[in-house]
Length: 166
Image 1 (cartoon, one colour):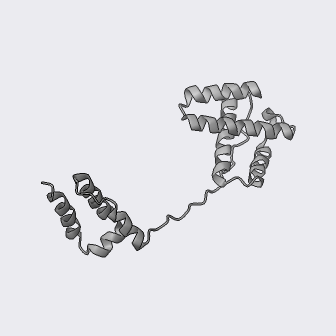
Image 2 (cartoon, rainbow, N blue to C red):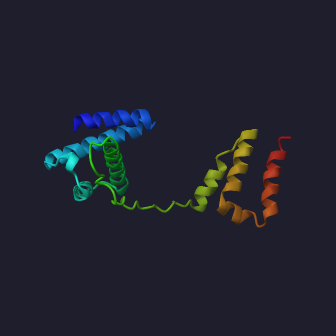
Image 3 (cartoon, helix red, strand yellow):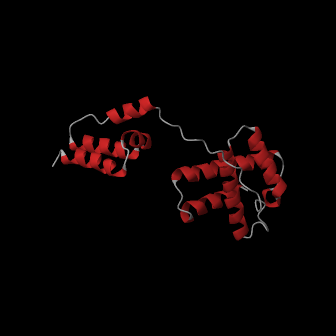
């Protein structure tokens, strides 16, 4: 398995043009998968769907996040696609396995005080400070809803900031 892993890592490094961090993650994931298979005395060429699911359950038991488990599955899937393409295995044991659903966190909302503090940050008199403040005013929906009742006023405020520096 070591030789195939080495060849696989060289393949993704040269052909897939992945970032350094992604390559390191794939390598770490595949080596951890190899340890698991060796511990369970499973030949990587004879792995089936249930073995892969068992590994994902093992990761879940280690309290790994869904995003980490999903990345592990992506690494293993790419490894077996490489092995299949090179006729080292006859079928992909990851076929049909769904990635775990990743929980989406709700965005945090700024309080009125935090918005005011943010808008006070560009406090200089230079053109960049005025530009930054105008952009913050325009982009901040609660500020816009609170202080600018109609669309035309929004544009007038931005223009008035910029006209100070003509």
